[in-house]
Length: 409
Figure 1: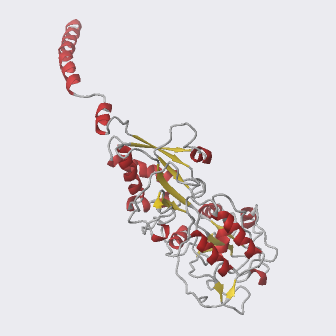
Figure 2 (figure 1 turned 90 degrees about the horizontal axis):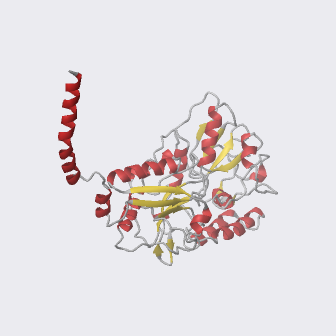
Figure 3 (figure 1 turned 45 degrees about the vertical axis):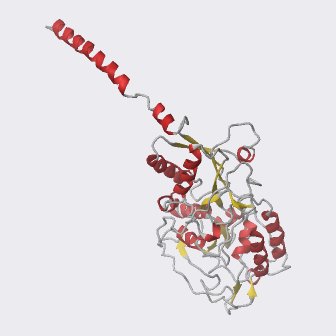
């Protein structure tokens, strides 16, 4: 009986052989030829080199970028985007290194001195006006921001009620990190201090009366809950007193350590420091702290997409442009909170009202936001010279801020 069953099974398998041969002739088990035919012999892979420079709040743009890549691939069957994280030198030398260059790059300002090797682009209709010119060179657009970071004030509530109007009138210590290539803390400091204040009988003024427009959130307070950011009135408009830094001010290589150890009353922070402060608070460590924007809206923390030169007939050109449009879509921009970064369109970035980064999101949507050009490496030298005048008290911050804005614009 067993031999008969085995013989019948073998006979059935032999009868299937002609059917399998016929199916192999009809059905393309290897889909690569279909993809190649669809994209004119191209493999379907778009290469993207990424150098972030500045840190997002979660440390990297990767969580957001990977999600955007997945949704793009879903909408473009047979197309694959492969991000590769490289160092600054790889991108700076990609036109001369002899290595096969990528199809696209994601870069911060100051990395490339010129748009050599990049394609000119059309201005996206949904990019905020404040960001429309930063990727231009000689009147043409070569890079488009897809994500930004920013700067806020953070202060220790046990050491000061708010950010002082004039640091020379208080004993509180201000710590500001030393400027870095991708985070110009000097330019950020000038922007934060670029307004004027109302003289007050109280040494520090009253909380919320020193900066305009100002939002606050209490975090890191024992037993306290985060409060929704609330716009506060602007009592400073039209008043004449400029802000001054502490006498003998110097940038501080250990600003972060001095602030979290309670040795300094305030410091400028980016999204990265804010997330780290939150983490410390959740562990019952670090100071009790608050946040608010400064006087001037500024950031040099931009991530911009550029497309490398390719023949117009190459299908990758259209797909790269489609990928850029996808990164700027509401679907992607509203999810930048995944990486603790911020939108470049009018779309909000996905933060709850109780999240401290909602304050930064609002500040970065300021219509007066000032940013450097992507291909202008000299602006930071100008900023350094201008801020040096502020530190030495040669000129007032509002005057110097206008000078820096003129250079950036």
